[in-house]
Image (cartoon, rainbow, N blue to C red; front, side, top):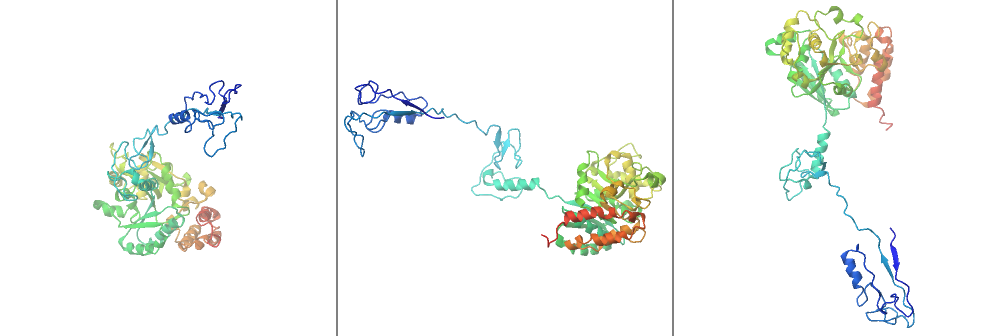
Amino acid sequence: MEPRWRRLPERQPGCQSGCGGGECGRARALPLPDFLPPWSRSAARRGPAGGPPGGGRGIGAGGGAGAAAGPGRRARPAGDPAPRRVRVVSCRPKRQPKPSSDEGYWDCSVCTFRNSAEAFKCMMCDVRKGTSTRCKDFSLCYWNPYWMLPSDVCGMNCFWEAAFRYSLKIQPVEKMHLAVVACGERLEETMTMLKSAIIFSMKPLQFHIFAEDQLHHSFKDRLDSWSFLQTFNYTLYPITFPSENAAEWKKLFKPCASQRLFLPLILKEVDSLLYVDTDILFLRPVDDIWSLLKKFNSTQIAAMAPEHEEPRVGWYNRFARHPYYGKTGVNSGVMLMNMTRMRRKYFKNDMTTVRLQWGDILMPLLKKYKLNITWGDQDLLNIVFFHNPESLFVFPCQWNYRPDHCIYGSNCQEAEEEGIFILHGNRGVYHDDKQPAFRAVYEALRNCSFEDDNIRSLLKPLELELQKTVHTYCGKIYKIFIKQLAKSVRDRYATSPKEK
């Protein structure tokens, strides 16, 4: 706002001071505005030393027109009219106190983070509102790496520590847990499966390998030779079954296959797990199937793919002598599990009106259906989810693509549109000439190394080999075998070192 200027009235005839008819030689003081602060009001009244109120210059206490204007100034000649004095009156409003920006917030006494009024705990360090602390005399930045600070440490000296701990809290390192059971001559097949998981995956992997004792040394040597990758860890476990029925469980279907039924009871510290058979090949990052866990609703505990897409060639709906899930049953070669939920759930069954937990239902099921099951542990899983269908999440056939999906003609529409995500070479097709398309993919990944150039050069030779298989039903649609594989290679190894 521009200041207003106020002038004294014009000088009257015979008046040299411009006082408006008042006493000559003394300026008439105007009333001072109320909004001036006390120090400025007193200074205005006092004026310069020896001068009149109002701060006029050049007229002394009793001086007239010819009085000296002050030290160092030229005296005004006699008869020269006195200059008009102008007084500045400011119109700036009185400063009002600003509203406090702290209203509705509170500062944490530990980390000094400003929290909203509704929060009863600090959003940074979880300390309750109103917690008092005592300060130490020295700086404690990064002094205590644990979650809670000592009671004698205040937040002022450890703000950065609190921020550091908070960043660790909200960004935990998530590992994907992958389990496999290997017995007999399955070492090479299992290593190829693990290699395919490592090549394309983004997040770190934790392998849980259940194998016979004679295979442990070979697994350790091979996996230790990959340690330079630093993208996985592994743990070797012996094959273990309940002691009272160990022999019966081990001979069920294939050797050691039923071990997967006891994984929730053995790996008690693991929350979620992806179990796969040894004859699995990942053509897409494990991260993608792992993300399906987030699609589970509140009742679902596991995910599997249907056994068949076409009921006319289905096995369960034509030959099974026991209950099975859905129209064609489910295949357990690729099984994603929330094992925390599995351990907590009480399952409905046809043996008793009382619901049973996972560890209590397996043996009664085996005793009741022992003479009626053909595919061992997979049949038992079908029986469980027949009685508890709300607990199963069914993912498309492209996540568990088997020879059954093309041996009599293509019947997996999702794979035709997007390609195969996970290849399941059951029936031993990796090791014979019955399905050469499956074997070509297996051989390409088995011979592939972890060098980027080698992985990028994988596709062209593989496509040439697949073109030789067009005489088979699966070979006629060979492009679905490399469609997703090519995308995974491009996404993971897009640019060669020479182009970077």
